[in-house]
Every structure is written in structure tokens, then in C-alpha cells.
Length: 125
Ligand code: 5GP
Image (cartoon, rainbow, N blue to C red; front, side, top):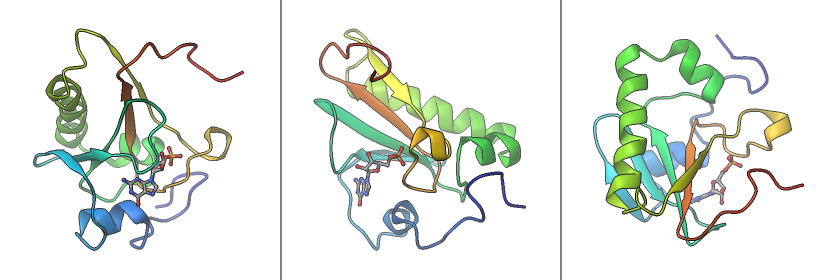
């Protein structure tokens, strides 16, 4: 079933093609649940994307259809990536865009990890 706003999963979206190996990425982490790689257009000194390995369009889709194991595994992976990047002491920000008002561009659920400098206000004004 489609989840409101973003429609059915598109197997040709850019993150699906990264997962299949069709498009290269600068990988920083991979386990059974998630793949993490550097954003192609970084907006902070550290800007990494963490994506689930399964086909979820958005945060809404993932939290509606994902199993407890998938959700726990994915968010543990987000924490593990930040730890691996040595961001825990200086701190970091995570962000997930969901749907039109957020400006979500890629219809495969993903969490951004930002760090490497003081990040300023939470939202652009
Ligand atoms: P969204 O706006 O959907 O939350 O974020 C999508 C992110 O994916 C953007 O920050 C964009 O720079 C990144 N991105 C888009 N295409 C590619 C790509 O081919 N490779 C990588 N590594 N990042 C991408």
C-alpha cells in the first residue's frame, strides 16, 4: 500500500541504485540493516546518509510497515555510524525529511547525519 504523499516505492530511485551497486558511493558503514555513505553535496564538514536496505519510501512508510527488528536495527546503525565517525564527543545532528513540506528529494527513507562544526540553529529561517 502506498503511504500518503510519496506513492509507491520506485526501484529506479538513486538510493536503490546505490544499494544495488549500480551507482557508486563513498561507503562508511554497512550491516544487515543499513548502508551509510557520504552525501554527494555535503552541507557540513561531515554529512553522511544512512539508509535501510529494504524498500521504504519515507519515515512514514518505514515506521508504518517496518518490523520492530528492522526499525531497531536501522536506528542502532545510525548511532553506530555517528560513533564510528567520532561525532559523539563533539556532537552531531540527525535529520530525516518526509514529504513535500520537508523538501524530501529521494524517495527511499534516509537519515542525514551532520557534524564536524557547531551546527547553528536547528532550522533555516
Ligand atoms: P533529501 O532532500 O531527500 O532529504 O536528501 C537527499 C540527499 O541525497 C541530498 O542531500 C543529496 O545531496 C543526496 N544525493 C542525491 N543524489 C546522490 C547521489 O547520487 N549520491 C550521494 N552520495 N548522495 C546523493
